[in-house]
Length: 263
Ligand SMILES: [Zn+2]
Image (cartoon, rainbow, N blue to C red):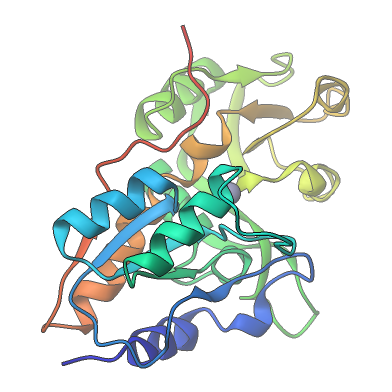
């Protein structure tokens, strides 16, 4: 029998909670740390549908990338999806744990390494280290393709490898690309750093219209969507958990939680 705190202690040995950003709310959000784990459902977003899935699968722990509660809750009346999710989890004795910007901010076994591996980048390092000593802790990632690629070919490579329905990109100011910057989730805050690093391309999501102009002909911004950049974080967490624990299993959610559709 494994207690929930044994699982969360292990996850925090890889991605310590103190590495999360100040605005974040990673950690145990709902549930008792002494809960005996029957099974784990892993997701990006712990929506009501995911809690239902966990209940039906007999999994009493949900590990999510995004915290279901970000700011404080003032009522629990079920008027929105956050309140309904929390109420459902409590009623059914389901624990919800989030591993968010603390997982973004580590190089090894982090969100961005997962993307870099899928794109085949070598010589990976942090794009914006937290401090000058901690080169393996911080935001974003820089790496190199093993060979130069035509920009167009690389855009199609990203689309395929990241299972993206839509790839938005700025003017083709480069014919070939080699040095790649990236950040899973909303990474536009790292654009300036990627330009300073002389990346040929910066891959992330949630760029606003005017921010696309900030590429300033110095690199190519590639925006593939927030869910799309982070979706393989689920695989990463399932693998991390199942490698370590053998008396329960972690399962991928089968619920597609991306709130954005394309036509
Ligand atoms: Zn995210």
